[in-house]
Length: 108
Image (cartoon, helix red, strand yellow):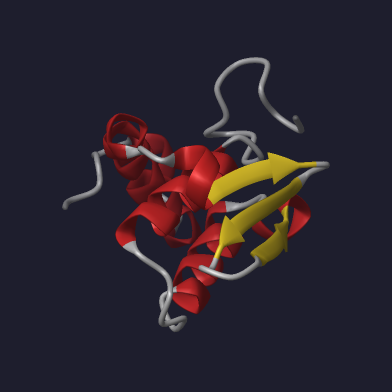
């Protein structure tokens, strides 16, 4: 998947994850199913079900594209994490990234 060209972001390599996340957001919003069973958001904490209990990630720990990407890498080390977990995590994390959040959803 190639990032969308965007002159605003191409001038600074630190924003590359923003471009990648914008592309992912389009795909993720279509693919998430079983969301309540695998992932939920409570009190600004993203909860992912690991098969036995809920794994928690505070929204403040994934409120930038760089932090969210770090968490994706971390989650992918877990044997219980599926593609659905990653998609649902990113869908919830995007709501806390000001540049990517849908209008009115930041901080919910």
